[in-house]
Image 1 (cartoon, rainbow, N blue to C red):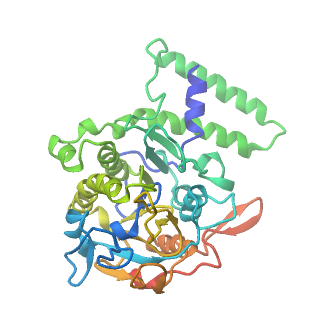
Image 2 (image 1 turned 90 degrees about the horizontal axis):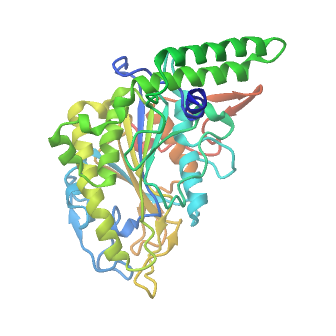
Length: 405
């Protein structure tokens, strides 16, 4: 029983980053905050008050002179000097599943790894034992979020799932299964593997065996998932809602050596009552995100951590007859901060009514390549798959050099 549970857990473990306490400060990391459903650019990063499609909300000044964002983000406005905002995304994708995949993989052709799995591979180091990629979300509905992780990189680079801020399953050995019994079972597995290796390819067998050692290492370090170990003031800082708890846990994991953490914020799909809907969603986001930016900066995490905030698409400038905004992939926004990124800048712009990109158009492949560059990885870095070199970034994509230091 124990071997089965460890094996199944191990198949989800990533690129074996270092055990807690062994982290090198220079290791680059990514925190991806994914606003699932597609937030409205007009109610967040690119408001258009007083225009045909602007809606009833106001724009407010920020800590960057001359730059305004939605009144729904008053706390975020205070940390705008830490952010790079892109207001000129045009992916042309207005579908949840396609948008999730394209924005996270930088490709539209299926089978490529998403950014977390890619970094689990590209940032791995000898001796790493913690998962390279951890994904956090609520337990259902799972729509839009589960679009595949590792692609052709295989199960070694799949994400470890954290659901509802609870540690992954099977991290605690059952009381009825002693340490000595576990050692006997593991030795039987090792002996069986050695016999099975005779006359067969060792690569899949070695990979399978590696999942066991990584699972055992994660069991020993399961405390990294326990946010109760954080101070009451830090728990209050991030907020008691699920998004806040996930973001605090993400900080613990990144400080412990995980290369990439994705935190999913749900329910941004405002086809009706858009302004009320965004008031609810932004109230949580605006509580936690600026606190996270300030906390990461205070701790020095922004020096080697790229923080990205995006959804899979934007929302239509035109307001529908239910007071909502529908799917829109032609002109929308996202934000980022941290390592490799200029701060306090706006890249690109939309026209007066927000219906199309006016300057600095950015596509999905451009974003992915820019994330890699910010993390000191060349988009031309190649995976070797069965002897076939495959570039990490889309060769047709560019890099948004205006936002990079």
